[in-house]
Image (cartoon, rainbow, N blue to C red; front, side):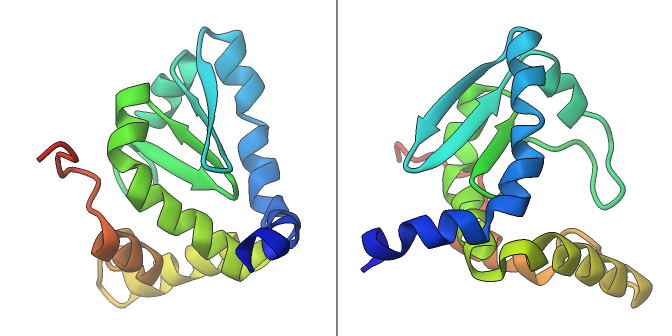
Length: 140
């Protein structure tokens, strides 16, 4: 069933993927690399690493971030380590489509306004961390 439905999911999530795709040439032009894993384009390295390591509004430096069917990461090992967590976000994009980014941002604002942690208390992150915290050793 998912195989039949898959093209529609890519189209539905494309607004987020489009944002992610804008960073791919930047990564490649600055020495980064790309790989395609399980239907998701992953870009890492180059100056992308420095960009992700800058503090962001809702959290500190980012190890990896999902934008539709594109995941940007600091390096190949980080992408491997965070893959399960980031795939939860891919599935969230497939559910929410073009509404994911606004919903994520509004949830973070609301949580921060209520005194919570805009990142860790965001329900999208709670769901992803419940699946995988991105820090466990998959070889154990």
